[in-house]
Image 1 (cartoon, each protein chain N blue to C red):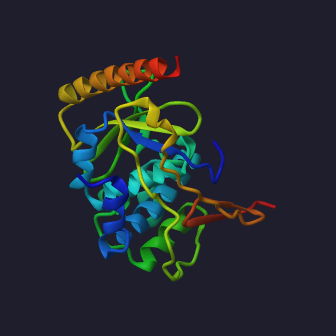
Image 2 (image 1 turned 45 degrees about the horizontal axis):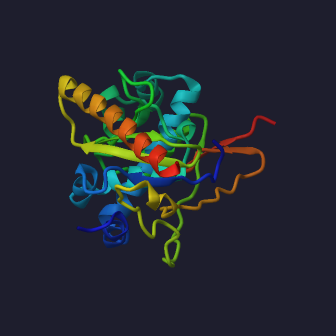
Image 3 (image 1 turned 90 degrees about the horizontal axis):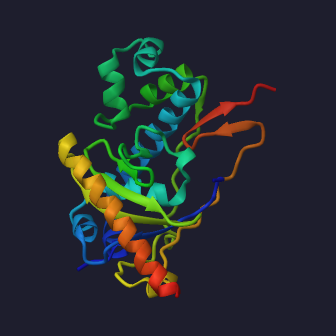
Length: 116
Length: 135
């Protein structure tokens, strides 16, 4: 990643919770999503952006007031946000990460089908 | 249902959003510098002559910063604060839209930001705080 690199940000699935969440999201949640779209992993502190535990592909973006976005990177410039929520307990969060992994696979399958 | 661009457009010029963006930019630059120097919040607290909860509170953006507290944090991290200045609002370069889609055929629709961060020659720029070069 280098300074000035920009990312395309998508939400998947289209009518899912991410879109609903964003409608009532706090200013800080929107601000961090915008920041992540403008910067690479190395340019955001590990406190706020790091790989989610129990997953090799899902990244976690958090705000201080508890908003959590789970996303994965599809290629060098595309971020796909699959879940968004307020802070939840660890057990429930692990389930969310598993679901995010499943959504990632579903997304890749759809993409593969489209490319064929 | 609103798109992200609509949500963002309705918020971007509000005091609440701009305050959050400023706080985020500053606290991120502090956190990145702390990671680079490998110093903990407790260590930073001792450098600024404050308690760890105070530093945590500052880094969470829960309290209104004073110029003095910004400068103290910067100095404790061997940095200086880049002067905050007013910038007239023009047409935002930020999102026109984040597409929300189910079908991959819409991959070509994209939300994109373009930023260019001017780097000061001889300095390491973390956004809000600037580290003078050693040379």
